[in-house]
Length: 561
Image (cartoon, rainbow, N blue to C red):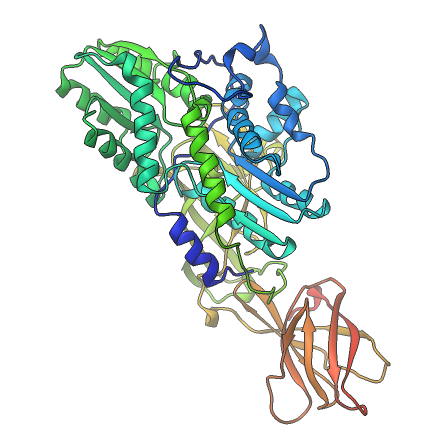
């Protein structure tokens, strides 16, 4: 489905700011007690809720996965974390605050990181929906009103992925609305800056500098980080610096800034929703490349604060306000489905050449920022560039398959600060397994990718023919076979030529298609799904009154020529 101008305008207004993803991975870490200056809500989880050994198990806030029937649902979408205590205090804290603020809504949880979902399912037997599963569950439960609130902080890749996953469901509910990221308006920047200043006041001395660690992104929303630092400076706090794990201001840049300041002590805390892998390892870990180790070796006294933003009441309150803004806003609107998803297009249907294309990934940590597709004599290959240097090999298949097929691993080529990989492409516009080998974890992680055809010129696709069978109706009508088949905007379109000139329109998935000819037998161009029984309706004027007649079409992909 294509998002209409209504959605575009809505998002343009809501997304004036940008977002920091609370990006985490698996591991074991610790969290400090919430600051005394933060007064949690009456039911919000606190560190005192955590029993000895809690890090090894789930908590009361994880009970949110047990859903019941409801007419109004508030779906809270987070990247996720397998750090149990931080999940309880941060994501659980936000969810609890929203439960308290909106008692008429059932609050549900979804994670976007499939790696985290799989880890928790295996380790804790905790089953958390990804966003597609959560949306399907809402449909099956006959929910009427849905508000989706991402726990992100800027409108980068993570937020874009949520929008892309949610909008196709707009027509399945009476109302569907999406809340904005944490940092969206000027008021949000001011509020979050004030919260951080209050939190960090106890560390304020002449010889101390505070470093806030954000994740970083190659999305244009990375501008959020310097904007937030400028907001802090405008309030008189040039002793607080914002750095990132990747992209933007890196630890090497921070080292230079600290040297100029004459600082002797450094306090670090994550500028992320959760205190997960990046906070516990990249920031506060004992490895030689952690920020703590690097700065300690530089001679600074280093203190780390392992608290995610999500456990601060002020941050929770901003998300509460953004949900209300979403409730008060216009609902998402999409056009009727004008096309059926294609089964993918292979190299023999594309002209030879090199094309710059987009690639969708199932994981924000496996983000493809550039891809050059080459089509040559019935084969396709691509050079795709990831957003960072975390993966050293790629395999077009699953991680399990990669372990058994070492000859088909694809090693990286260093392109500036990123890794590029040359890989074979079997088809466009379908999900393909693509495993990545993590350099740091030394293990394979499964992903799916979609090499999209949308940027390939229309005249680059070669028209073909395909056999089609028509059944249903009275048995007297027929259509020509083979039919002409062409590919456009990621969809197969077939030319349907009827055996008479008496058909005034066709209905496919509720969308009306009119004839494309003015003389001769009725001819239509409709979107089709291959190797599937397609139910369609055709209106004939050959009777005393126009009649809609149900038919079934089946297109055989093996017959394409």
